[in-house]
Image (cartoon, rainbow, N blue to C red; front, side, top):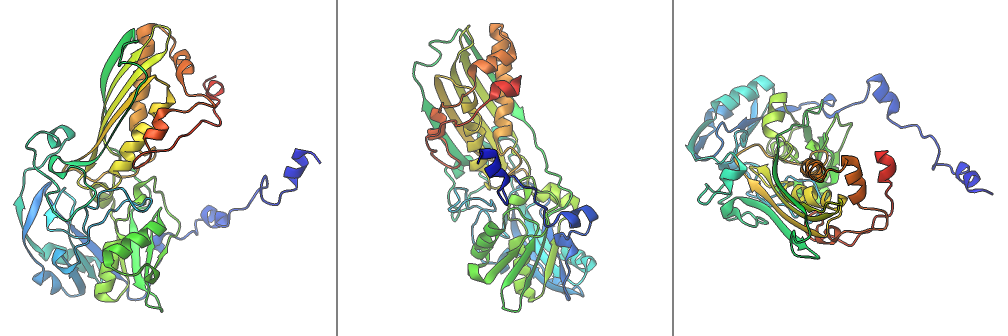
Length: 439
């Protein structure tokens, strides 16, 4: 029997399979989180800080709690102080544990001040307006350059956060490595040094972040949520709310777009806290404005590249330095920064390689996972630099790439030096047909 005949006899491999949810999606009957409702479900709303950097001196929710229909108002005084990361990734997470459900220090305009659960959205919004907050406004840092200046205001000056390598200098994550065969630039005929910048971007999924929490008949906290990481949600909420993992169930319905924005556990914990406070189902659904100010963005980046190349097109040196703006919290800062180098530098082989990466705290919106996960920022700089090197030696840009890209059977010192959150492992390319792709 030939290999093709064997393949044809497989029941699953090489066979067309009908997606179980195909008909519902085609007919518009698929259910998303917001399509679900429960008797007695309350509406949750959040109060956001208007300042980029501030400390809450006083907060008074007395009048808010008197609004008819309001069933719970939570501030930082009402919740356990459990530092965590909102990043949904492998455990133990290498990310900074620098976040509280509600804190007394605000680190960006959009940080959460309080949460309300009420019978109607109107009652919840009225309650938000009646929460009295007195702020001590602090000097903000709004750019990478300002954040790392000597004497810059310290964004995370608390003493109970962990996994922050240099909080005093607003460094949320850092990593360096060097692997070289010769002295730097000793064999280069042309040396090019350039700086590149990438901007903010928002995922803009059609479905905004939405979460519903309630108790089931067995007393478990059920989290029905638009998420890309249901198991991470369960584990992180267990830590935040101090509930055993076995007492939490996460349901992930159809997700109306995520692209990395729903790889963060943003509403599950605070919605769960409102259900615990009221013993009733609670639904929090972001408005589009809330998505923009208080969900996640792509990391803006500052990339410095210094590269050397021979006249024959051989790349001799690649020094890659990147600073990514993680915003007010570390979240995916370390892993995105690592991928900006580990996923890009090996693409084109150089004798000498180095990487310096920093994820920098600022008083800006929090950055997180976003399609490309750091490689987007890194490749923008790398490919731009490739064009400049090719032009400098008078070589066709495609031919220059074909001469230097990593090939099947080859490895790179970068693979071993850089993993997602620390050192990587030795790897060899087992398949690569870039020539055909370019052609």
